[in-house]
Image (tube, rainbow, N blue to C red; front, top):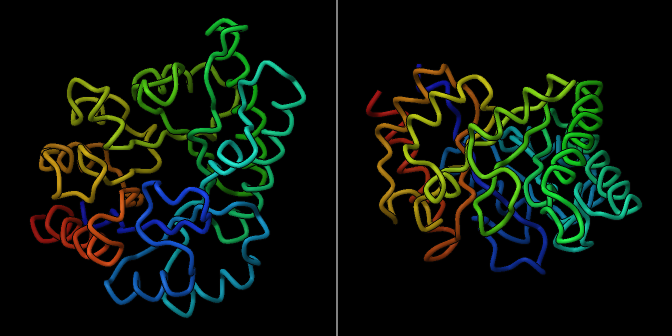
Length: 277
């Protein structure tokens, strides 16, 4: 049933990335209270570090507002510290792996997987693309195994060509996953990135199938779904066909403002994933 797919809204606690695609900002409890009032099932967190909030406090807030923690982002490692898994400097790669490992441990305490997006990095001018992919695979193997020991999957996100020159489409992500020794890495299907890279969003979802472990719910312009031109019906059908039962998480710009964006997101979620099925 499509209704098994759960609604989720993003909360960012990193002031230095104010222009980014997250719905709620700054105040974790206020964001969770608003999400609960609107009827969201979960929140996805973007924090500067693992000590942004104590896991027991996060657990308590989740229980208070009846919200799951769907996932935790790792992008602050790149945005704030310049760390990526494909940096030509082995010391930087080691720091990147440690940052992500710490975030995996943080998320696992609230049963939330960590997401690797921007921290995958790029093939640098001083290294070949294949060398960068080898470094990426090395990091994903190590971190996928670590996440498995923590009892959570690891989520890897293909990004559009303007953000990485490594993996841009879901089928390339599937191909990468098949080369890994770990079987604990899942793909993130981000509808915004897919709008730029995929010939057909529904077909790419069907092709990736059970490799998909998380979905980012945003329109073609990265505003909340309904404020762009993404055709959602085929996407919903494809997700239903592959038996996806995870989160539909709004990683979108807070346009025209956070409250309106959240309200539009839950309306779109209910329209496509609840009322029509």
